Each structure stands twice: as structure tokens, then as C-alpha cells.
Length: 228
Image (cartoon, rainbow, N blue to C red; front, side, top):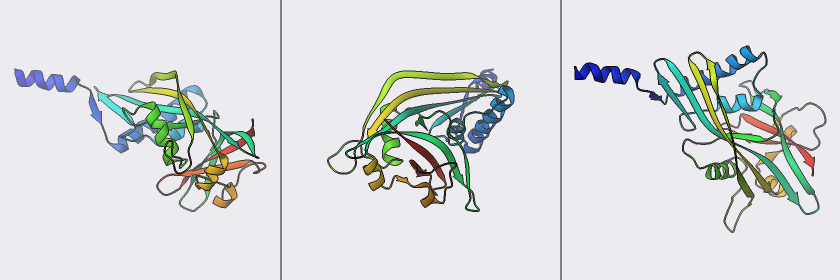
């Protein structure tokens, strides 16, 4: 009797799944389901964030064949101020992926605020510091090396809903901002001219820069520099 009760309990208890393939499968299901039901796709930056979900920055719970995928994100404005150059806002304008043939695939970015996934249980301030230090190659504190000032606002947003009968999505998003130096970004080799990466952008490339990331440097986000 006790064994049967335990079996029933286990069958109804949520199971935390840490399989990368299942997490990616859920992300792709969300992307296709949203486009099908809304008649228009998710913004490229949101698609990119979902495709970059891993067991480290998301939680996938399965209960009675119902999947619950949750993650936390931070989005932020990027501003620079340099003596002689003035002040600019770096507005994300494109998402780019280098295929195995060495050709860049490109799409518009969407909302012009940089978006990145936080680790599970990570403090938003610590998460934003990690993003700035790893992607933008900036030290937040310390005497030596490039530095940046940043803040994470208390304002939060929650995206929650049934994407499919068997799949529910939860996204908790914080907002922030960072002020840094364009010269220091260039010196740290955090940003590049698009043409130096072989990246061809629509329109005038003047005032456009690109952030390169990923283990094999196959992903990039391009920015438009807007004078403040």
C-alpha cells in the first residue's frame, strides 16, 4: 500500500529536467507556436534568448506531461561618454549568426535594449556584472582595466502564459542601464567594425559597431550609435 502511494505521489510530483535537448526543444516549440498563433514571429532578440537557454539559466519542470519552462533575464540601455567624442547610446539593431560555410545570417534585433539570460538563482546585479565583464570585457570594480558604471532598476516585468496545451512559459525580466567609454570598449577589443568581421549590414555602415560572442565566435549583435 505504501509503495503504491509513493508511486502515485512520484507520478504527480514535478520533475526538474536538466537535459539540454529537451530545453532547446521547448524553446523551439515556443518560437513556432507564438508565430503560428499570433501570425507574426517573436522579436529576433527574444528568439535568440530562448535558443540560448541551458540547464544553467533556465528551469524546465515536467508534471503529468505538462512542461513548464521558466527563465530570468535582464535588459539594459548602453550609453558611452568620451572626451572629444561626446555621448552616444548604443542601440542594438541586428542579430547575426555565422553558418558553417562562413556566411553571416542576419535579422533585425527588435526592441533596442540589450537582452541576456540570468543564471538560475543569480542576483540581477551580479548577473548584469557578469554579462558586462564577459561579453563587453569590462571590469566593474578595481583599480586597473576598463571600468563601467551600471544600475539595475527595481522595475520588473513578467511574461507568463500557456503557449501550447502542454507547454507553459514564465519569464521574469529586470531592467538596467550601463554607462561606459567607447574608447575603452575598442581598447578591450569588445567591439568591432562590421566589415572587419566580414559582416555586411544594410544601409550605411558608418556609426555601426558589432559585439562578437559565443564559444566559437559565431554570434554577433550589431549596434547603431545614436548621438545623445
